Image (cartoon, rainbow over all chains, first blue to last red; front, side, top):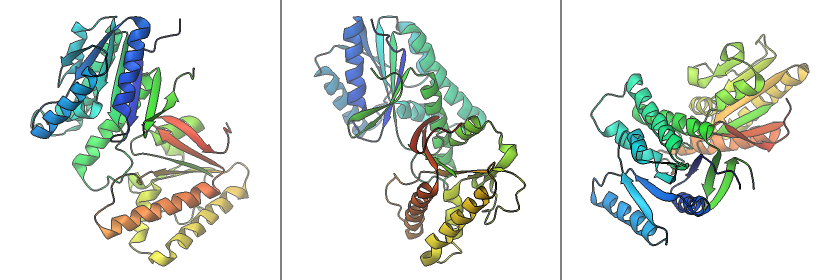
Length: 191
Length: 149
């Protein structure tokens, strides 16, 4: 039997098809292992647009013929490890939402300490879940290919996000960049 | 000359340090550390140099240099760097530039121009470099040339 990857990291631009690819991958892994599909929902339905987006993603998952268990957690994602076991193929979509939640849940000042804590909260949280689960698939956004020199807050945000992405790629067994619906394998064995 | 590019905070510096087994202290000239643009590198007492943050220097130079001469000005710099490298077989120059080309069109004219010029200069750098890598969160893709080390 082929080795089942323990951590898969997927990024792509807006509407690149990264979520669809991630879901497809999760479903295939669940078939292969007889595992349970678990979706980690991180979005806060804070306004009508966000509500619509969440509903759309939900309907997409429901119409895919696969049955998903949905767990909702907007911050301190690692606490979800308690309800996850070796059966679970966990899909977490996406890192930027989680980062936004952690950064903006309080009115805390963005000190180095705070930013480091947020980064660790997210990365070690996911890695804790990975230890429990069969596979964790982490989805994030490609947003680092434009100039950022002007705004300090934006600069802090992208610095943390870049660091998180690097840590996930390093910890992953497979990493993919999705361009226009086509996944490019950046890390892992081609097979 | 080795040109290394990729998005911001993708681990370009770390990757270069690992590949060449060096530390910043050895040889880093960096726009991110507010070092001025090294118009000449002949006075550097090193055989291995890294010029980092090309896009930021381009923005600074854009404020002084006439736009029409801009690309020629930079091609001359590249020519000078290559000459420096060829003087000794042990010499090596690594250029790091962040890819700023994939966001939405900037509102301000000067930022549009900056983005255009950065893209053109990167094309010139890639054309002259013997090796080009794109770094994606610490992973390199060789776009040109071969693994040397």
